[in-house]
Image (tube, rainbow, N blue to C red; front, side, top):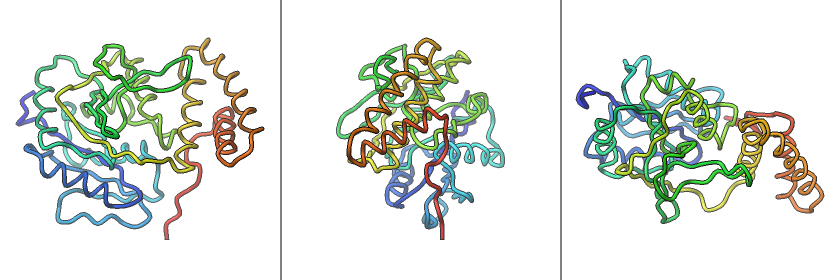
Length: 284
């Protein structure tokens, strides 16, 4: 498709401090090629103020998780005249793009014949990793690849690109996780539909991850990871993990300390099939 006729939209889900989100928007605006529109889903307690007309800000009530935010943005594209072949990027609010990121993505896109879910080279903590990975069936951990590979199972959730039609085919971003592991579930959906999971090696972004995890973040990491290996993997692996997760729950439940009890809570909820938000966001 001609890049002059192929629109590109960026969806950012905002929460917490406005600083990283505004930095993300500023980095996009500084690019050599501008997207058609930036859509920001505002989940923060206090309304996000974006200078000028840099982006369209939508503030849903109640606030949902990351997947719900991305899906709201996908729905908003209906009124933005998005077409099936247009490029849509779901991007974390703590991601900063390079000046040539969007231009390089356009250039890479035109050289492909078949496109599914597309990731970038991501810089995290001063190190570059390829923005896709696999889930280790033995350890239950999702691991990013450090070299290009054709065996990717998912694209790093910090920066995922696909056509609008592909997003709709996959029913958008999974919402049940609320936070973390949505990208692995999305990747499994794509593999079931035989859509390729690809990396664009010339497309580079920086992900400014937090140095430490909050209690809620740790909860979602553990719960959603445990649910993935219990319900998303082949049945014989899933049965193994249901047993292992019960043993993990018992181990953490018996150990002293709030961190162990938090992990035990997450494992308990995973075994019970609980999903969604741990604690609701209360706005004034």
